[in-house]
Length: 276
Ligand SMILES: NC(=O)CCC(=O)C(=O)O
Image (cartoon, rainbow, N blue to C red):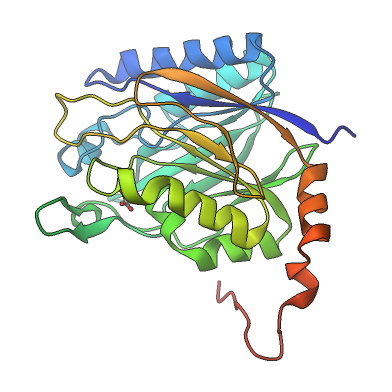
């Protein structure tokens, strides 16, 4: 089995038309596949502008129209797709949900954002996802032929414990569809990604919508892949585009041999414990 993986991070321009957003996403999956991508990842809220005023209006069941379109695109192009996220309606609640599709159109995983984005930064941004969204309560991984992958959505990246759990589960790649903003993005986006990668000695990818300066929530962009050494492998600015990155999963092992954190951890002093 090859240790090489070609990953495409789709920094999608997302507007108010759900139909346009979804058809752009489908088009980008096709384009990425034609460039040899084996795994294509979309941003958080790829079918909906990011904002609490939009989530209920755009919400749909999963599977539903947006995720079915992504499923078909995965199947038609024979690629794995991490379907960013969509507002998902179920049982009178709305979740921020990522679906993962295999190359035969099989649903491999579904992740509901665990940590809701509620912050209030003086002179910057105030946002309360919990006003309209409910949190998920589970970890989400899926298997590629090359490695196990762990999924988080945006704010989930701030919680180091979740990434540690994924690493303990054997993930070598963590993907975070996300939409950071113009207050936290410039300082925290890449730093958090590098932190998760370095601490856990894994690849970490982030996938943002493109920046729309006319939107109520302005995304930072900068979809990026960082390697287990915390080097930026591939990145971009804030316009729409596809970031391609070639991963070598053997490199994870190499870094772990050079800096053997796994065997040096003091389990007699501390431990990350999963409760669910
Ligand atoms: N969509 C989100 O969860 C945004 C998270 C974010 O911007 C942050 O600073 O954290």
